[in-house]
Image (tube, rainbow, N blue to C red; front, side):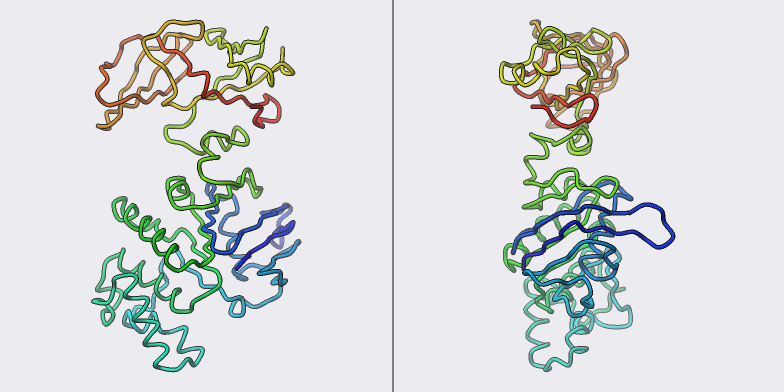
Length: 361
């Protein structure tokens, strides 16, 4: 099912400002769309508007071209999975999964067939006659998914469904959810504040901040071509390094004067219009070159090292105390309190307008 939002906004009664505004978005049939953003940005509100649990103040919501603004949640052909699982504690797993079909007065044979089919896909057949209190958090999450699956909805809506799980189980369930999506081929809309979930699961990401869309696209585009400074800083771990400065004689010069970088030719052409103007330069932690002195090199002192095995995260400081984070392969030899020469990989520089913070290159 295709989901469209046209200039959608939400304003709660008694509040002066809109929580969400000017949302224009198309989610194609069978896409796995992740709505990502920090706490309070409006992502759960947006999901609840699609579900019909929150009213729409302005704009239009369409399912396959049909206006849904006033359609009751039960008539929207959706199924929602909540963060809290919302299972009935007094019912068995089987009865939890069958409940919505029983309420629709579906035939017993159909209910039984669908519950067993979902249980088989989710590998929870052995727990069908247990109560939720008798199974693990990961198994309860699968039951919540199974309860949604048996309805065979046109759209799956998921509101931070993995946030209550431990790190190892979250990793496992991410893979399971992607497999499940491929098998079912249902349009899925998934809300999270976790960029790892978004980057590893989505076919499309919608990044929100302060109730507005910052960027829409494929996961890799957010890392390699962030639309603005907020996107660049939100996506990626460690966070992207950013330096504020000006373009002077076709070179980027940081405010302190310690960073002087000559951009590659394609970037230099775009930056000609910014001569004498403030810009931000960004670079990901893994895109520095070490132990090399050239026209773009600088000195940094290693303050702290995080050894993660396959890589080391170097937290460094420049002479003016500007922080700079770099990641290098784990077998490299670095020690705290050492000072080294580093240089910028000019193929990996991001430039942003100093006033609007929008991407330049």
